[in-house]
Amino acid sequence: MGHRQRRRRGAPGKRMTKPALLFDLDGTMLDTDAIHARVFADMMAPYGIEVTHEFYIAKVHGRLNVDIFAEILPDLDDPQGLSEAKEAEFRNRLPRPYPGMPGVQALVRAAEADGWRLAVVTNAMRANAEAMLQAIELRNAFEVIVIGEECERGKPDPMPYLEAMRQLGVTPSHCIAFEDSPSGMRAAAGSGAYAIGIRSSLDDATLRAAGARETLQDFKDISLDALCARLKGETTT
Image 1 (cartoon, rainbow, N blue to C red):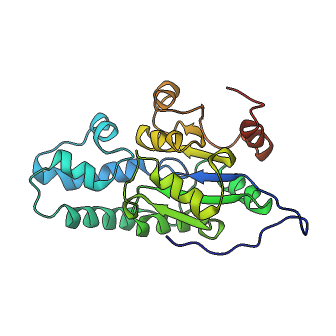
Image 2: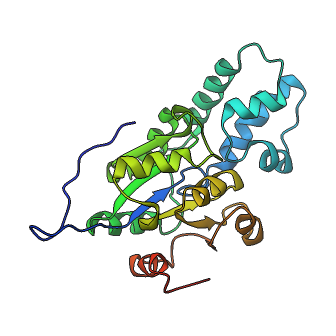
C-alpha cells in the first residue's frame, strides 16, 4: 500500500509520538452517497432490483462490492467486472473539484502542519480513493492510503485500520478514526482507535450502536486540542 515519506518534527534527540488521524473516505471526508446510490440504481435496474434509500443503507453503504454483489446477485457470472464498471461510472460522475465535508480540509491541514500522522482507510477501490482525494484537494496530505480489498479482510474487520497503524508506526492508543457507516465503525472501534462517527447519513444512536465513542455532524467544530483531550481521556461525550 502506497505511502510517501514525510519529515517528522521534533527536538533533536527527543522521541515524539504524534497522534494519528485515520479517515474513512466516502460519506466521511466527502458526501458521495448520492452519486453512488444513483450509479447503483442505474446498474441494478436491468436486474429488476430497485435501489431505494433504505436498500442502499442496508445493503450497500460502507461495504465491499464483492460482499454486496454476493448477497444481491449471487448468480452473477462476472461480479468483478460489474464492480469495476460501477466504480468507473462513479469516477466519471464525480465532479472535480468536489466539496469536502465541512471543516475537513481545515482539520487535515492543521494536523499536517503540526506533524500529526494521517491515513485514509477505505473500502473504496484505489482508483476511486485517489480520485476523491484529488477532487477535495487533499491527496498530498496523506502518507498512507489503505484499501480494504487489498487487505486479507476488509471492513467491518479491523484489519485495514490495523494495517494503517502498522504503516504509520503508531499504536491504537494514539489514533482517532472517523467513520460514517456501521461497517466502518465496527472496523474502527475493533482496532482499538478512538472512534468518532460522522452523521452524514446515519444518526447518533446507530453509529454508537456500532461502536462510536461519540458522533459529530461534520468537522467544523472539532480542533486538534480537543482531539488530544479525547486520547488523554479528559473529555467524554
